[in-house]
Length: 422
Image (cartoon, rainbow, N blue to C red; front, top):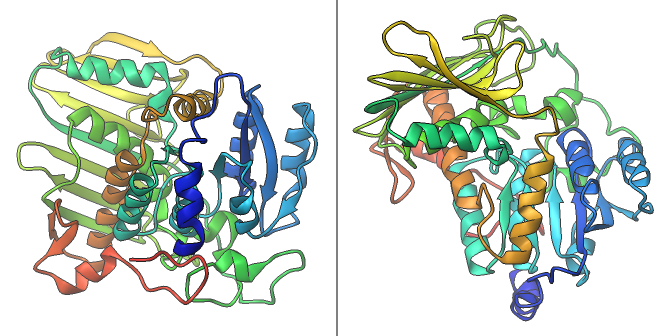
């Protein structure tokens, strides 16, 4: 695959700087769940042409087709194998809403084929995959936008500006919480692959498991073989915002706990977590409770940045839209607030990606930013799975002095045309 795409990528690099008058041609890869939301966001852009729909499940594509048709576009052909889209020189970008075990393989293949990429969060299954994605983007001079869409909201940008202004005083700590009520997914037996599903392609480079509905579609992320749990699924959004606000990248040490305490079901990943990331001069804390309906600080997912004069909180607070508020350090009264309007939170991020494709300037959440934030989720999971604190080398991206924990920095693959090299 590297040989197949090396020379086309070299020849197409200059052509991929799309002229302002041209439409950008995309292939939608994965159109269920988040992929369906991305279909809506990109079909809302007048300068987008949808050339392909790429999905392995024929049973879920009609809802996305309806969105495309309602936007005034024709139904694109449906393919299961992304290589058909990569071989088409007219395709400028892959918009990826697949399950996360395909995020790294799909992004690397697309970059090697000379395509720009919009890839949903979390970007990777493990830390090593994320670094390979960064290297593929750099090697091929590709624009890769991570689908952590909140930084594209004006209110998020204003929140970060407020934190950086010094009005909070000396900032030493931030806290992220993911406190919401998730579902018990129950227990399901393995079964034959249902009709209309290309399970071989869906499995991709992973060692193959028997089909199980609790390891497919909406519940796939709760299984270690495929996913990262809710710290990667939802918590990574706020970890990204908090990390940016603190001005940090990767930590030196990580400690805490994570385990299943509430649900009796097929989920393997924690429903409860309390993780601390130590940067030496700053701390970032992550709290997760997936078994309560009442949230924390009047929102279910949020960020608090603590200074010695005031605290700034970001989230979708009860009765408000996405935004932030500042509480005075002495009496706790709200002294400042800003909100995003009620429009889609996906559309501004999609627009930022398309504009970056034209300008060749970095998008709002460039792939390395996404790698740093997603790595926080991976490090939290390593602590949860090993049951012990770890030291981490940000330069080598390896766990120090703990060989068993360091094995979780990467994973094993089977032989497959999509297996990442390196």
